[in-house]
Amino acid sequence: NAGVMQNPRHLVRRRGQEARLRCSPMKGHSHVYWYRQLPEEGLKFMVYLQKENIIDESGMPKERFSAEFPKEGPSILRIQQVVRGDSAAYFCASSPPTGGTDTQYFGPGTRLTVL
Amino acid sequence: AQSVSQHNHHVILSEAASLELGCNYSYGGTVNLFWYVQYPGQHLQLLLKYFSGDPLVKGIKGFEAEFIKSKFSFNLRKPSVQWSDTAEYFCAVSGSSNTGKLIFGQGTTLQVKP
Image (cartoon, rainbow over all chains, first blue to last red; front, side):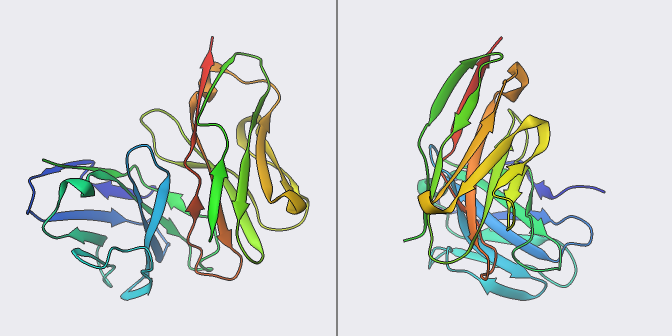
């Protein structure tokens, strides 16, 4: 059973460009979480999605950031007009459909560098 | 405010030494508690978790943690570390009745010297 897949693993963008990060959950998982890890900090929750629904986006910055988890295909975290402060590692986690309090399984992360 | 605090940012031990990593949390209500580990170059993996029941939880690779409700603590222990335990360790908490989002501590880097 393949684990959580994220791509790309490394992404370099210039200020003002868009970044699109993809996450494919484990087979059978329908819950996806996105976390961000800034340098020298722990992981911070961003958003929780189920298929076609955003359940909790309390950790998402108000502007430039959006997330989706379509019926088909991976979950996408989109950052528009990136700034240097967006440089971080972005982790996706998935959990089974039994509920949001089940164990989350993490992907390898996407390391975004904004030049 | 909900938060998790890990007391040690960087720990250096020799092989066979005992390990205890501190974790305290601030969270209203019933909690679920987790320790995750990130080995160099790898993704986060679950070491152990506490949802309910026996407050002494055993995980993989000889790790255990004890939930002390009165102290809001969930410290991680291992009696004898190995060089392969070199990694970053994260404590996390979620509310039993919420969406399951995890609140992480800032992490502890453990370096085990052979």
